[in-house]
Image (cartoon, rainbow, N blue to C red; front, side, top):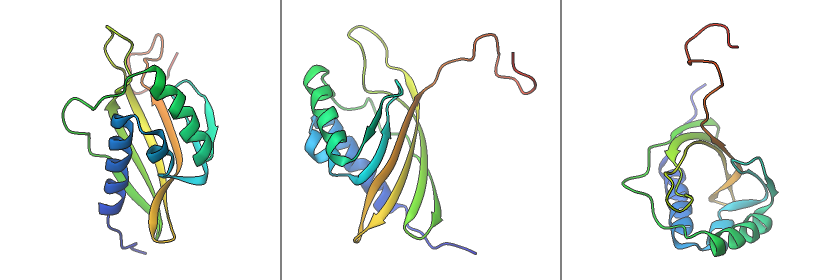
Length: 143
């Protein structure tokens, strides 16, 4: 079965998320999530629901200046699981940086759903890339 899909609205959703993040606009950022969204930060913090996502980001934006990304955003891979449901994975440099420190690379996974004619983020997982101690990344047994 082939699922007809158009990545345009999902790319637009991600562009609006990036703009809200860069502007430090927690309200606009939270509005892009479903009411029952799950949001996992790279520290493993679990945030539930659009309202809590907005409030948590309001506190974050007050402490850490966000600013825009250097250069164009990386293109996410988008796979439609069924009409109205898509998963995307993006590998990107994080815009959150400690003063004087380089950013960190993250793998970000989104599940986007279409609700009432609009795409929203139902699940977000941000995982910081870190090497596995004692493993060079080659195929085969890991330590």
